[in-house]
Image (cartoon, rainbow, N blue to C red; front, side, top):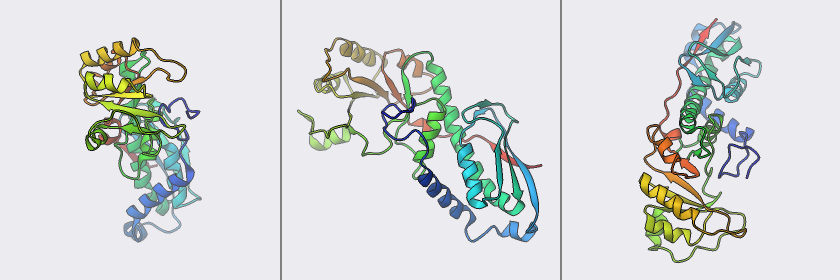
Length: 294
């Protein structure tokens, strides 16, 4: 396990990797700027200095301040970016999030990419916090999935952590997860493959018969995919009556599929350990954040 409490299944570092962060930001800047900001070059004096505020237009959990700051610095290292709130804080509409000052042309060039990152990441953190709040004070963990935007997984999963959630695997090389398609291709399984030392193993099941079969192997995690509340309760009961030892610690149960804010507490109350929710990252309502020149 990593040292950060918000990692549950992932072994990745709890912080954003600086090199990967710069790659993501540089790609976004190239995409947005192209050969240059023609409008700004034609309308703004080269030596003009300005100050501007990033302002939240709706209530949210703020996330992405470090990313916005790095975006600004990669456009112009002499620009000043001063956060006015703390990462992960719940803020009200109208709150000034940060102040940016310096060369007017470069402030305007950095504006959209910095805001895009802030809006996306704050949206993910806000939605995650809403799900976490729905099941408090239960011990079940809200976990993300690999259903992320291509190229932005690091940022999206970081935002889940800021929102109070946990990360599932970051990439395919982190753990063994035998899903329905693996089982379909191999026509079922009577034994598990040889697992490299240090790797966790998880098996996906879709009904109680598959659950009983998977439990024979005592994997680290069994994923209950799109199972009913009644079947999840029965799976927890079966697990509670299964003997484990130091060689095979208690298997954890992960509920997945069909989770919403309307039923997430009911799912958590079945006694599952983990609830994975693709919606945290694949269906994001970005927060409305704007830049106002002072």
